[in-house]
Length: 303
Image (cartoon, rainbow, N blue to C red; front, side):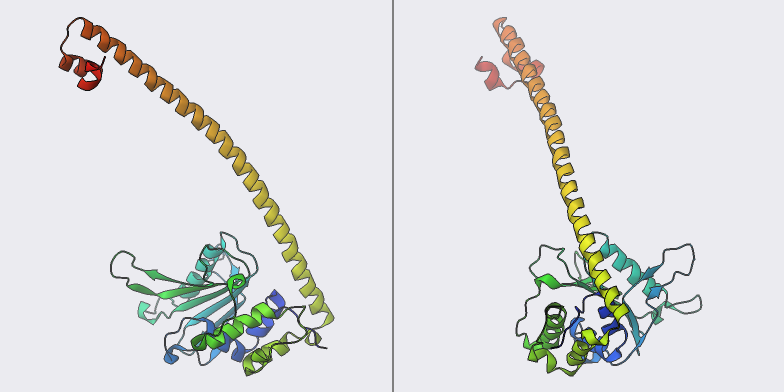
């Protein structure tokens, strides 16, 4: 019986999509928000996944897969196992580097081509029930006009549920490949095997296709992910406890401050009433008492 490795792991993801152009083309055409067949990718060339800065003092960065098509459009594909608040900034940073790296001093801006950043996240980060998130630079208030150049796709894999979307069939099948194939898989669904590209991707993650050293690297990856999750859970728990303690302390201080403020205001009001009552007993006109004490005519009349 065949055994499989999880395609979401760093080793397997790069093997499937970083070494087989036909697979990454099919994958990106299924998951990127192309609006017409003319926009779809026909051929690609792999680029160095390391985004080296022009200035050696600047920050270096690496993506899982980076490629360019015949039109000059660049595509960054990443598999992220755990969500962190900084991840969106890292994605923006990498896509921006890929965008500006297209030009040297002698080339005009109109030669710039779009950069697409496709991010598969094996975690949840939004309150939206949707698993697919498409980000663009958009004028918000009036025209909804888009500044072309950068486009970011985030897919929350845990929210994905397989349904029969006839117009997005390949998207569903590729996401099923990522979410249904793992170390426990013994029989691959026929719907996946019926697609040549996905069938090939399944063969690429068969355990028998990996060396002993690669399998050790694979196991080490999952050990690190497990340890990282424990650390994050512990940090979140400590942060929650610390936040609750700070909140209680802040609440007590705020309560004391509010209480002192209310007491002071009540004392000042009582003083105004005493003064108004004394002036009223001496026959001072109500409008004069009101001007001096700040009390209304109704309040003074009721004394």
